[in-house]
Image (cartoon, rainbow, N blue to C red; front, side):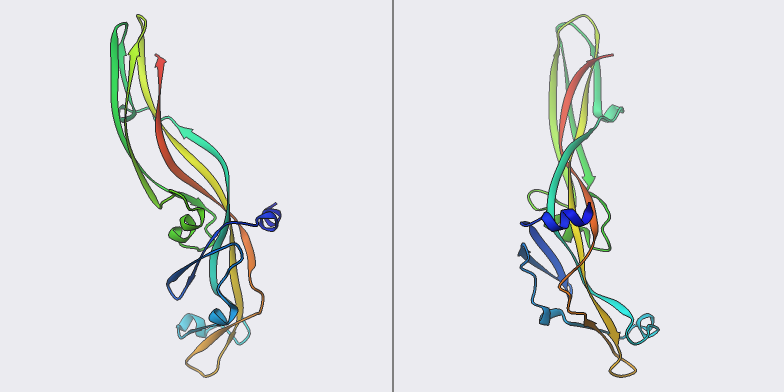
Length: 201
């Protein structure tokens, strides 16, 4: 199903990293091959790799698809207030800050992935909201606040090559000529907003 999603996705924001610079594009508008055909390095770890060994030139996320919204209702004093009716009112103000959860990043930076999702999605999001509710009957009530999330999936790709040693000190990762290799589909859970509900307890 992952590859099917990759095939049917036709429009989406793209974010890539080349030499530490973020490049944004639309759809298949990737940086030209000659701009990233080789990557040089001198690390001792890379030196241990033989001539012709596989290597990665760059990784990026591309395309997005909204899946659904989910919610959490924490049962602690920061997220609820209780009282007895009737003719009373409950009031609560909650500030929540949550980091965006990413499952299956494939080594891609979170900032690059959230740029692919676009919109208001950020690596960390903070929301402050106030809620109130009138208590209509003679009963014990609790005004609870929940966190709401938007869930997305995205595709991950990489450009590959092979190790070549022009000399004994510097190696290059020579592009294999394939524009992109599909790595898989990742998931993003973004904290969106707060909402409330009044319940009898």
